[in-house]
Image (cartoon, rainbow, N blue to C red; front, top):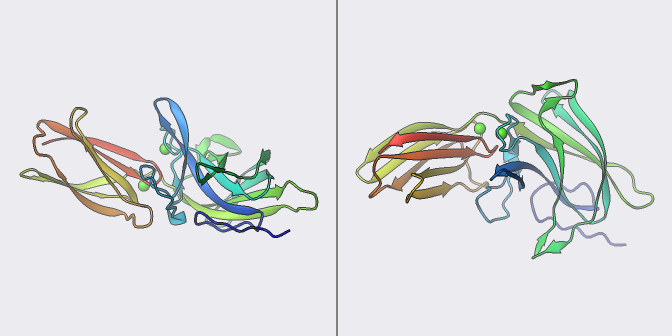
Length: 244
Ligand SMILES: [Ca+2]
Ligand SMILES: [Ca+2]
């Protein structure tokens, strides 16, 4: 039987039984958790995924605290387990699974993605210990659900990043508010709002996002104060209130 190979997002193929695999996380909104893909701008309706920006932030704030494995498969498959390896190659966490994931199919011209939460950043031997910021690797083990198939594995690098983005400069010249910001990895958005009439957002798409940005907002008519909110690609939020 010929095996289709369709990749709709960057990410290496396990083998021909998988379309693609990605990493994801969860974000809380109105007390409900939603699955999102890592390496993508959460506010943009595009399919751009940059694996260099796979990062999550296990600091318990409800945004990006859990690492998930997200897949679209040509065949039904069973997720068997996972391993987390640190930058020096030590296995620091692992888990067994027996999760059946049906083959992916199209819904509204998008392939359905199946999400398995794999890691919350904690040490198996001491759940009070959360691993520090840095580079890690997720290896997942899976087997296609048909006779004669063998276990496949695939390794995906990612970062733990709990460092919030920072404002490096704010200045007002007439009606122009200029904000410079930086992050250790990459900035996803800079927003300004006053909870009433003013609400502006500048987005940095995942293929071109950088660690330093400068943006200008027109604040004509805005008086008193505004909030500035920065979000990085690990879903760390930083909010300040400034007078204008
Ligand atoms: Ca977080
Ligand atoms: Ca960061």
